Length: 388
Ligand code: PSV
Ligand code: MN
Ligand code: MN
Image (cartoon, rainbow, N blue to C red; front, side, top):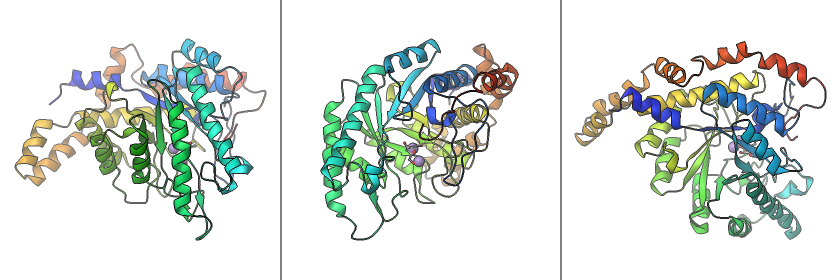
Protein backbone atom coordinates (compact mmCIF):
# COMPACT_ATOMS: atom_id res chain seq x y z
CA UNK A 1 0.00 0.00 0.00
CA UNK A 2 1.42 3.37 -0.98
CA UNK A 3 2.01 6.00 1.66
CA UNK A 4 0.28 9.35 1.33
CA UNK A 5 3.64 10.86 0.43
CA UNK A 6 4.08 8.37 -2.39
CA UNK A 7 0.60 9.15 -3.67
CA UNK A 8 1.34 12.86 -3.56
CA UNK A 9 4.64 12.40 -5.40
CA UNK A 10 2.99 10.38 -8.14
CA UNK A 11 0.17 12.91 -8.60
CA UNK A 12 2.73 15.69 -8.65
CA UNK A 13 4.56 13.92 -11.49
CA UNK A 14 1.40 13.63 -13.62
CA UNK A 15 1.13 16.08 -16.48
CA UNK A 16 -2.35 16.60 -17.91
CA UNK A 17 -2.21 18.15 -21.38
CA UNK A 18 -4.83 20.79 -22.06
CA UNK A 19 -6.20 21.52 -25.54
CA UNK A 20 -5.79 24.92 -27.21
CA UNK A 21 -9.28 24.71 -28.73
CA UNK A 22 -10.89 24.31 -25.31
CA UNK A 23 -9.92 27.91 -24.51
CA UNK A 24 -11.65 29.15 -27.67
CA UNK A 25 -15.36 29.55 -28.32
CA UNK A 26 -17.07 26.33 -29.29
CA UNK A 27 -20.56 24.96 -29.50
CA UNK A 28 -22.78 22.46 -31.17
CA UNK A 29 -23.84 22.57 -34.78
CA UNK A 30 -26.80 24.63 -33.62
CA UNK A 31 -25.04 27.55 -31.97
CA UNK A 32 -21.73 28.81 -30.66
CA UNK A 33 -22.17 31.03 -27.61
CA UNK A 34 -19.32 33.53 -27.37
CA UNK A 35 -17.82 34.23 -23.96
CA UNK A 36 -16.03 37.33 -22.73
CA UNK A 37 -12.24 37.17 -22.46
CA UNK A 38 -11.78 34.34 -24.93
CA UNK A 39 -8.35 34.28 -26.65
CA UNK A 40 -7.97 35.88 -30.06
CA UNK A 41 -4.97 33.88 -31.21
CA UNK A 42 -2.80 30.88 -30.31
CA UNK A 43 -0.51 33.04 -28.16
CA UNK A 44 -3.42 34.01 -25.94
CA UNK A 45 -4.61 30.40 -25.77
CA UNK A 46 -1.19 29.51 -24.44
CA UNK A 47 -1.41 32.32 -21.89
CA UNK A 48 -4.63 30.76 -20.58
CA UNK A 49 -3.12 27.29 -20.55
CA UNK A 50 -0.21 28.66 -18.53
CA UNK A 51 -2.66 30.00 -15.94
CA UNK A 52 -4.21 26.53 -15.63
CA UNK A 53 -0.74 25.07 -15.18
CA UNK A 54 0.28 27.63 -12.57
CA UNK A 55 -2.86 27.12 -10.50
CA UNK A 56 -3.00 23.32 -10.67
CA UNK A 57 0.73 22.58 -10.91
CA UNK A 58 -0.27 19.75 -13.24
CA UNK A 59 -0.87 20.95 -16.80
CA UNK A 60 2.57 21.58 -18.30
CA UNK A 61 1.75 20.98 -21.99
CA UNK A 62 -0.79 22.28 -24.52
CA UNK A 63 -2.00 20.46 -27.64
CA UNK A 64 -2.26 22.48 -30.83
CA UNK A 65 -4.68 21.90 -33.70
CA UNK A 66 -3.52 22.88 -37.18
CA UNK A 67 -4.73 25.07 -38.91
CA UNK A 68 -6.81 26.35 -35.97
CA UNK A 69 -3.52 27.35 -34.36
CA UNK A 70 -1.76 28.44 -37.51
CA UNK A 71 0.95 31.05 -36.92
CA UNK A 72 3.77 32.41 -39.07
CA UNK A 73 6.51 31.34 -36.74
CA UNK A 74 6.02 28.15 -34.73
CA UNK A 75 9.41 28.42 -33.04
CA UNK A 76 8.32 31.77 -31.62
CA UNK A 77 5.05 30.23 -30.40
CA UNK A 78 7.05 27.51 -28.64
CA UNK A 79 9.35 30.17 -27.16
CA UNK A 80 6.28 32.06 -25.91
CA UNK A 81 5.02 28.85 -24.29
CA UNK A 82 8.37 28.35 -22.60
CA UNK A 83 8.35 31.90 -21.23
CA UNK A 84 4.92 31.14 -19.79
CA UNK A 85 6.20 27.93 -18.19
CA UNK A 86 4.48 25.45 -20.51
CA UNK A 87 5.44 23.39 -23.57
CA UNK A 88 3.78 22.45 -26.83
CA UNK A 89 2.28 18.98 -26.63
CA UNK A 90 0.65 17.00 -29.42
CA UNK A 91 0.15 18.50 -32.84
CA UNK A 92 -3.35 17.58 -34.04
CA UNK A 93 -3.82 17.42 -37.77
CA UNK A 94 -7.02 18.65 -39.31
CA UNK A 95 -8.10 17.05 -42.57
CA UNK A 96 -11.80 17.38 -41.95
CA UNK A 97 -12.76 20.96 -42.70
CA UNK A 98 -11.98 21.68 -46.34
CA UNK A 99 -14.54 21.30 -49.09
CA UNK A 100 -12.08 18.94 -50.79
CA UNK A 101 -12.63 16.43 -47.99
CA UNK A 102 -16.31 15.83 -48.61
CA UNK A 103 -15.65 12.22 -49.61
CA UNK A 104 -12.70 11.76 -47.30
CA UNK A 105 -9.12 12.92 -46.85
CA UNK A 106 -6.46 10.21 -46.85
CA UNK A 107 -9.01 7.63 -48.01
CA UNK A 108 -10.64 9.84 -50.65
CA UNK A 109 -11.04 8.07 -54.01
CA UNK A 110 -9.33 11.05 -55.71
CA UNK A 111 -5.51 10.77 -55.53
CA UNK A 112 -5.11 14.57 -55.69
CA UNK A 113 -7.18 14.98 -52.51
CA UNK A 114 -5.21 12.22 -50.82
CA UNK A 115 -1.98 14.02 -51.77
CA UNK A 116 -3.26 17.25 -50.26
CA UNK A 117 -4.24 15.48 -47.03
CA UNK A 118 -0.90 13.66 -46.70
CA UNK A 119 0.96 16.92 -47.36
CA UNK A 120 -0.92 18.43 -44.43
CA UNK A 121 0.13 15.54 -42.19
CA UNK A 122 3.75 16.04 -43.26
CA UNK A 123 3.43 19.78 -42.57
CA UNK A 124 2.28 18.85 -39.05
CA UNK A 125 5.53 16.95 -38.56
CA UNK A 126 7.42 20.08 -39.68
CA UNK A 127 5.50 21.94 -36.96
CA UNK A 128 6.51 19.28 -34.46
CA UNK A 129 10.15 19.88 -35.41
CA UNK A 130 9.74 23.64 -35.01
CA UNK A 131 7.93 23.46 -31.67
CA UNK A 132 9.70 20.49 -30.08
CA UNK A 133 6.45 18.50 -30.00
CA UNK A 134 6.89 14.74 -29.77
CA UNK A 135 3.43 13.59 -30.80
CA UNK A 136 1.47 13.76 -34.02
CA UNK A 137 -2.17 13.06 -33.26
CA UNK A 138 -4.23 11.85 -36.18
CA UNK A 139 -7.98 11.71 -36.33
CA UNK A 140 -9.74 11.11 -39.61
CA UNK A 141 -13.38 11.93 -40.22
CA UNK A 142 -13.14 9.69 -43.29
CA UNK A 143 -15.90 7.24 -44.01
CA UNK A 144 -19.04 6.78 -46.04
CA UNK A 145 -22.71 7.52 -45.52
CA UNK A 146 -24.30 4.93 -47.79
CA UNK A 147 -23.76 1.26 -48.51
CA UNK A 148 -21.94 0.94 -51.82
CA UNK A 149 -20.64 4.52 -51.73
CA UNK A 150 -17.03 3.34 -51.84
CA UNK A 151 -14.98 0.19 -51.34
CA UNK A 152 -14.35 -0.40 -47.66
CA UNK A 153 -11.23 -2.44 -48.47
CA UNK A 154 -9.78 0.08 -50.93
CA UNK A 155 -10.20 2.79 -48.32
CA UNK A 156 -8.19 0.71 -45.83
CA UNK A 157 -5.42 0.36 -48.44
CA UNK A 158 -5.37 4.13 -49.00
CA UNK A 159 -5.31 4.74 -45.25
CA UNK A 160 -2.38 2.34 -44.81
CA UNK A 161 -0.44 4.08 -47.60
CA UNK A 162 -1.00 7.55 -46.14
CA UNK A 163 -0.03 6.42 -42.65
CA UNK A 164 3.12 4.71 -43.94
CA UNK A 165 4.30 7.83 -45.78
CA UNK A 166 3.69 9.99 -42.71
CA UNK A 167 5.32 7.46 -40.42
CA UNK A 168 8.48 7.55 -42.55
CA UNK A 169 8.72 11.29 -41.97
CA UNK A 170 8.78 10.98 -38.15
CA UNK A 171 12.07 11.88 -36.53
CA UNK A 172 13.89 10.44 -33.55
CA UNK A 173 11.67 10.37 -30.46
CA UNK A 174 8.55 11.41 -32.39
CA UNK A 175 5.38 9.33 -32.30
CA UNK A 176 2.22 8.98 -34.32
CA UNK A 177 -0.93 8.62 -32.21
CA UNK A 178 -3.88 7.26 -34.17
CA UNK A 179 -7.30 8.13 -32.76
CA UNK A 180 -10.46 6.19 -33.56
CA UNK A 181 -14.12 7.16 -33.39
CA UNK A 182 -17.17 5.00 -33.81
CA UNK A 183 -19.10 7.35 -36.08
CA UNK A 184 -19.65 11.01 -36.93
CA UNK A 185 -19.43 12.75 -39.29
CA UNK A 186 -19.60 9.56 -41.36
CA UNK A 187 -22.68 7.55 -40.48
CA UNK A 188 -22.40 4.27 -42.38
CA UNK A 189 -18.72 3.30 -42.29
CA UNK A 190 -15.87 5.11 -40.59
CA UNK A 191 -12.37 4.22 -41.77
CA UNK A 192 -10.88 4.16 -38.25
CA UNK A 193 -13.94 3.31 -36.16
CA UNK A 194 -12.46 1.40 -33.24
CA UNK A 195 -9.36 0.55 -31.27
CA UNK A 196 -8.86 -2.70 -33.17
CA UNK A 197 -8.54 -0.91 -36.50
CA UNK A 198 -6.19 1.65 -35.02
CA UNK A 199 -4.17 -1.08 -33.30
CA UNK A 200 -3.85 -3.12 -36.51
CA UNK A 201 -2.55 -0.13 -38.47
CA UNK A 202 -0.17 0.81 -35.66
CA UNK A 203 1.18 -2.76 -35.54
CA UNK A 204 1.84 -2.65 -39.28
CA UNK A 205 3.61 0.70 -39.00
CA UNK A 206 6.01 0.00 -36.16
CA UNK A 207 6.82 1.03 -32.63
CA UNK A 208 6.47 4.78 -33.13
CA UNK A 209 2.77 4.32 -33.91
CA UNK A 210 0.38 3.99 -30.98
CA UNK A 211 -3.34 4.17 -30.32
CA UNK A 212 -5.02 7.13 -28.66
CA UNK A 213 -8.26 6.55 -26.79
CA UNK A 214 -10.77 9.39 -26.83
CA UNK A 215 -13.12 8.43 -24.01
CA UNK A 216 -16.11 9.85 -25.91
CA UNK A 217 -15.63 7.79 -29.04
CA UNK A 218 -17.24 4.46 -28.18
CA UNK A 219 -20.61 2.78 -28.34
CA UNK A 220 -22.58 3.08 -25.08
CA UNK A 221 -21.53 0.45 -22.58
CA UNK A 222 -18.09 -0.16 -24.08
CA UNK A 223 -15.62 -1.27 -21.43
CA UNK A 224 -12.86 1.29 -21.97
CA UNK A 225 -10.66 -0.04 -19.19
CA UNK A 226 -10.46 -3.35 -21.03
CA UNK A 227 -9.12 -1.52 -24.08
CA UNK A 228 -6.62 0.29 -21.85
CA UNK A 229 -5.41 -2.98 -20.32
CA UNK A 230 -5.13 -4.71 -23.69
CA UNK A 231 -3.20 -1.88 -25.34
CA UNK A 232 -0.87 -1.43 -22.38
CA UNK A 233 0.01 -5.11 -22.49
CA UNK A 234 0.83 -4.73 -26.19
CA UNK A 235 2.81 -1.49 -25.62
CA UNK A 236 0.42 0.19 -28.05
CA UNK A 237 -1.30 2.73 -25.81
CA UNK A 238 -0.03 6.21 -26.66
CA UNK A 239 -2.48 8.33 -24.74
CA UNK A 240 -5.96 9.61 -24.08
CA UNK A 241 -8.25 12.34 -25.21
CA UNK A 242 -10.14 12.65 -21.93
CA UNK A 243 -13.69 13.95 -21.77
CA UNK A 244 -17.13 12.83 -20.57
CA UNK A 245 -20.11 11.73 -22.53
CA UNK A 246 -23.69 10.89 -21.83
CA UNK A 247 -24.72 10.08 -25.40
CA UNK A 248 -22.14 10.35 -28.19
CA UNK A 249 -19.06 12.56 -28.58
CA UNK A 250 -20.28 15.10 -26.02
CA UNK A 251 -16.84 16.53 -25.12
CA UNK A 252 -17.96 17.39 -21.58
CA UNK A 253 -15.54 17.75 -18.67
CA UNK A 254 -13.68 14.55 -17.84
CA UNK A 255 -14.88 12.92 -14.65
CA UNK A 256 -18.18 14.81 -14.75
CA UNK A 257 -20.44 12.15 -16.21
CA UNK A 258 -18.78 9.06 -14.82
CA UNK A 259 -15.96 9.58 -12.31
CA UNK A 260 -16.02 5.86 -11.53
CA UNK A 261 -15.16 5.02 -15.13
CA UNK A 262 -12.24 7.45 -14.97
CA UNK A 263 -11.08 5.74 -11.78
CA UNK A 264 -11.33 2.31 -13.43
CA UNK A 265 -9.29 3.52 -16.39
CA UNK A 266 -6.64 4.97 -14.10
CA UNK A 267 -6.58 1.81 -12.04
CA UNK A 268 -5.50 -0.07 -15.18
CA UNK A 269 -2.89 2.61 -15.83
CA UNK A 270 -1.52 2.49 -12.29
CA UNK A 271 -1.51 -1.29 -12.08
CA UNK A 272 0.74 -1.31 -15.17
CA UNK A 273 2.95 1.50 -13.79
CA UNK A 274 1.90 3.57 -16.80
CA UNK A 275 1.18 6.73 -14.79
CA UNK A 276 4.92 7.24 -14.51
CA UNK A 277 6.28 9.76 -17.01
CA UNK A 278 8.71 7.16 -18.41
CA UNK A 279 5.73 5.23 -19.80
CA UNK A 280 5.01 8.19 -22.11
CA UNK A 281 1.24 7.96 -21.91
CA UNK A 282 -0.15 11.33 -23.06
CA UNK A 283 -2.99 12.32 -20.71
CA UNK A 284 -4.67 14.87 -22.94
CA UNK A 285 -8.00 16.64 -22.58
CA UNK A 286 -10.24 16.97 -25.64
CA UNK A 287 -13.19 18.97 -24.42
CA UNK A 288 -15.38 21.89 -25.43
CA UNK A 289 -16.76 24.26 -22.83
CA UNK A 290 -19.82 25.52 -24.60
CA UNK A 291 -21.88 26.93 -21.74
CA UNK A 292 -19.53 26.93 -18.75
CA UNK A 293 -16.61 29.36 -18.20
CA UNK A 294 -13.63 27.82 -19.91
CA UNK A 295 -10.59 28.30 -17.68
CA UNK A 296 -12.32 27.17 -14.45
CA UNK A 297 -13.78 24.21 -16.37
CA UNK A 298 -10.32 23.17 -17.52
CA UNK A 299 -8.94 23.58 -13.99
CA UNK A 300 -11.83 21.39 -12.75
CA UNK A 301 -10.97 18.79 -15.39
CA UNK A 302 -7.30 18.67 -14.39
CA UNK A 303 -8.38 18.30 -10.75
CA UNK A 304 -10.77 15.49 -11.69
CA UNK A 305 -7.93 13.55 -13.33
CA UNK A 306 -5.69 14.19 -10.32
CA UNK A 307 -8.41 12.95 -7.95
CA UNK A 308 -9.05 9.80 -9.97
CA UNK A 309 -5.32 9.11 -10.14
CA UNK A 310 -4.91 9.61 -6.38
CA UNK A 311 -7.73 7.13 -5.73
CA UNK A 312 -6.21 4.61 -8.14
CA UNK A 313 -2.86 5.00 -6.36
CA UNK A 314 -4.59 4.26 -3.06
CA UNK A 315 -5.73 0.80 -4.14
CA UNK A 316 -4.08 -1.64 -1.77
CA UNK A 317 -2.18 -3.77 -4.31
CA UNK A 318 -1.26 -6.52 -1.86
CA UNK A 319 -4.80 -6.95 -0.59
CA UNK A 320 -6.09 -6.90 -4.15
CA UNK A 321 -3.54 -9.42 -5.43
CA UNK A 322 -4.21 -11.78 -2.54
CA UNK A 323 -7.97 -11.57 -2.98
CA UNK A 324 -7.60 -12.21 -6.71
CA UNK A 325 -5.30 -15.19 -6.13
CA UNK A 326 -7.68 -16.60 -3.54
CA UNK A 327 -10.68 -16.20 -5.80
CA UNK A 328 -12.13 -13.83 -3.23
CA UNK A 329 -14.47 -11.94 -5.53
CA UNK A 330 -15.97 -9.68 -2.90
CA UNK A 331 -12.63 -8.97 -1.25
CA UNK A 332 -11.06 -7.98 -4.56
CA UNK A 333 -13.96 -5.73 -5.44
CA UNK A 334 -13.83 -4.18 -1.95
CA UNK A 335 -10.13 -3.35 -2.39
CA UNK A 336 -11.07 -1.23 -5.40
CA UNK A 337 -14.17 0.31 -3.89
CA UNK A 338 -12.39 1.26 -0.65
CA UNK A 339 -9.91 3.29 -2.67
CA UNK A 340 -12.59 4.78 -4.90
CA UNK A 341 -14.66 5.85 -1.91
CA UNK A 342 -11.76 7.62 -0.22
CA UNK A 343 -12.05 11.39 -0.19
CA UNK A 344 -8.69 12.42 -1.63
CA UNK A 345 -9.46 16.13 -1.79
CA UNK A 346 -7.74 16.98 1.53
CA UNK A 347 -4.62 15.08 0.40
CA UNK A 348 -4.50 16.97 -2.90
CA UNK A 349 -5.08 20.29 -1.14
CA UNK A 350 -2.11 19.40 1.07
CA UNK A 351 -0.04 18.53 -2.01
CA UNK A 352 -0.75 21.97 -3.51
CA UNK A 353 0.13 23.70 -0.27
CA UNK A 354 3.38 21.67 -0.07
CA UNK A 355 4.36 23.25 -3.38
CA UNK A 356 3.32 26.78 -2.56
CA UNK A 357 0.06 26.62 -4.53
CA UNK A 358 -3.35 27.67 -3.35
CA UNK A 359 -5.14 24.55 -2.07
CA UNK A 360 -8.26 25.70 -3.96
CA UNK A 361 -7.24 26.35 -7.61
CA UNK A 362 -10.69 27.44 -8.81
CA UNK A 363 -11.14 29.85 -5.91
CA UNK A 364 -7.63 31.13 -6.56
CA UNK A 365 -8.51 31.71 -10.22
CA UNK A 366 -11.58 33.76 -9.28
CA UNK A 367 -9.58 35.76 -6.75
CA UNK A 368 -6.68 36.35 -9.15
CA UNK A 369 -8.44 38.96 -11.29
CA UNK A 370 -7.24 37.17 -14.46
CA UNK A 371 -10.75 36.91 -15.87
CA UNK A 372 -11.34 40.65 -15.44
CA UNK A 373 -7.94 41.37 -17.02
CA UNK A 374 -8.52 39.25 -20.13
CA UNK A 375 -12.09 40.45 -20.48
CA UNK A 376 -10.82 44.02 -20.73
CA UNK A 377 -7.66 43.27 -22.72
CA UNK A 378 -9.37 41.07 -25.30
CA UNK A 379 -12.44 43.19 -25.87
CA UNK A 380 -11.27 44.21 -29.34
CA UNK A 381 -10.58 41.91 -32.26
CA UNK A 382 -12.00 38.57 -33.21
CA UNK A 383 -12.17 35.81 -30.64
CA UNK A 384 -10.81 32.43 -31.59
CA UNK A 385 -13.52 29.95 -32.28
CA UNK A 386 -13.94 26.45 -33.44
CA UNK A 387 -12.01 26.34 -36.64
CA UNK A 388 -10.06 29.53 -36.02
C1 PSV B 1 -12.91 14.19 -33.18
O1 PSV B 1 -14.21 14.08 -32.65
C2 PSV B 1 -11.95 14.67 -32.12
O2 PSV B 1 -12.10 13.93 -30.93
C3 PSV B 1 -10.52 14.64 -32.60
O3 PSV B 1 -9.62 14.47 -31.55
C4 PSV B 1 -10.37 16.01 -33.18
O4 PSV B 1 -9.06 16.40 -33.42
C5 PSV B 1 -11.05 16.80 -32.09
O5 PSV B 1 -12.21 16.00 -31.80
C6 PSV B 1 -11.42 18.17 -32.37
O6 PSV B 1 -12.09 18.71 -31.25
MN1 MN C 1 -10.41 13.53 -29.66
MN1 MN D 1 -14.17 13.73 -30.45
